[in-house]
Image 1 (cartoon, helix red, strand yellow):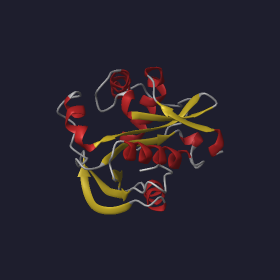
Image 2: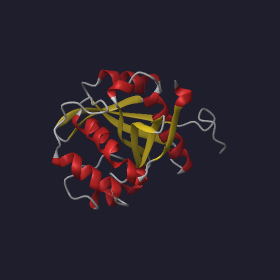
Image 3: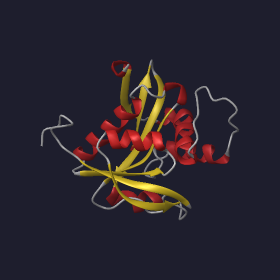
Image 4: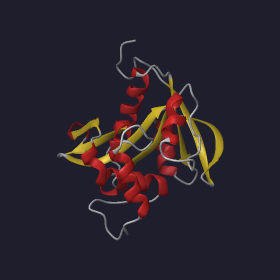
Length: 189
């Protein structure tokens, strides 16, 4: 299955599917495509608007998409920790600081439920890890909702280590970090 998945930079035209996936990641819910029983929310609409714009935390510029048969089936949003404050400021003051300056940060990872368990999440994570090294970050970090055991298992299997408990947006999360290896990702130093 992984051979049929293509990872590419997001484009503004991916906004509809990407916003659904980002909403899924941020609300800790599963969504299928086409969506069933999802009510249009103002949050999804705002995510679409931010996605289409430049230089903000939710911009397409910071997102890689997984594509199957020319259809977006998953996304990963990541950026350098040194840029987080500026990216957040472009959105508003409601966002919390999550990344450290010396790390690449995975803000969101989501795959449509009907495409789950096919290695797409792992492919997206490897793509973000390569981006981190290309931007000269030697570690990558993320927060995962404490109750999201499937994601915790995936991250652990891929070498992410629990470093602390955290509360983000009034929900318990686990912070995980991975030191990156150029050779493991097939990148020359």
